[in-house]
Each structure stands twice: as C-alpha cells, then as structure tokens.
Image (cartoon, rainbow, N blue to C red; front, side, top):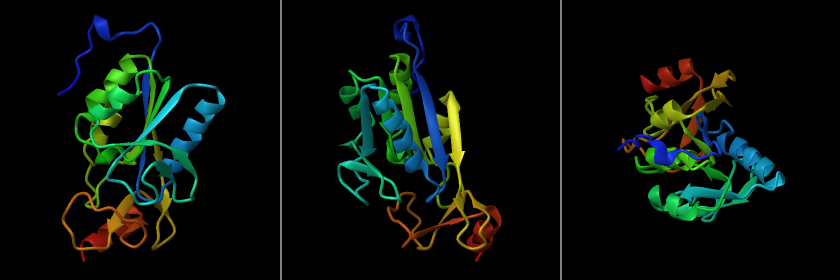
Length: 193
C-alpha cells in the first residue's frame, strides 16, 4: 500500500529520501556510513537500522566490506523502524532490499515527518532484474547515488552481482564466497553459460 500524502503529513521541517544503490562490493554501505557519520558530527540525532536477517559481519552493527562500522538496531519488519525512529533527525537504513514491501510507506512517512532518510541497497538481484522494493524506493527518492564496483573478470566498472551458486532464491546471504561483481558484458556472458 502506498501512502497518499495529505495535509496532516506535512511538517514545517522538510524531510527527504536519499537512496544509495549498486551491486555487491560497490561501496553502498561505506557511503551510508560516511553520510551518517557526517550527520553525527553535525550533532544531529541519528538512528540506524538493518534487517535482522543480515548477520554477515555483525548482529548489531552496520559493517562495510572495508570493516568500517556504525552501531545499528536490527529489525524484523519495516514498520518496526517507525516505532524506533520517533525522536531523530536522520534515519539510516542498510540492505533495504531485504525488508518487506512496507519499507516504501515507512520511508515516505518518515520523510513527511521531516526526517532525512538515507537508504542503501542492491538495485538489481542476481538475475540482473530490479530488486524489489529498491526500484520503488528509487522512484520516490529526492536523491539517488549509484555506486559501482570493479568487474572481477575484466576490471571495468561493475553494476551486476553475479551469484556463483545454483540457488534460485532471490535472497541468499553471502560475500565473495558466493558473489562477484561483474560488468554488463561479463555478467551476461556468465549468465548464458
């Protein structure tokens, strides 16, 4: 369900949505942490959330592949964020593609409440298709930053996350043991084989 704005949603303080997207190993979380740290330096009240299923590096921290980290609150459902982000200026959300579809309404509501919402997530799944709900989050965002990895085959800019396993599940948590960043040509060449 999409939140239809009405007069009761608007706040004198303007909020907005920023989306950081890209493939695996492109620096999405690194950029999220950088922006959140700048907000903290500016003495803004920041709350950070991650999906409870993402325990790859830490149960309670958002951690980049470069091992930069920031404390976060793991949540099971997108609506849990609304309950915990009432008294903050900035909301950070990592791995947004792992949340249920309610994340779209949640971030919209937070922005209407005057909050700056910064989201990081994969824009495409392992098949090279738009990753839901990231496609909708990008469409309602005021700012979108697409970051790129380096192709692990040829060294060009990479925008695709190639999965080395045979699983057809959309969500399979893993790192370099399961995924590699590839450019368009290398991705579709491997996908066809």
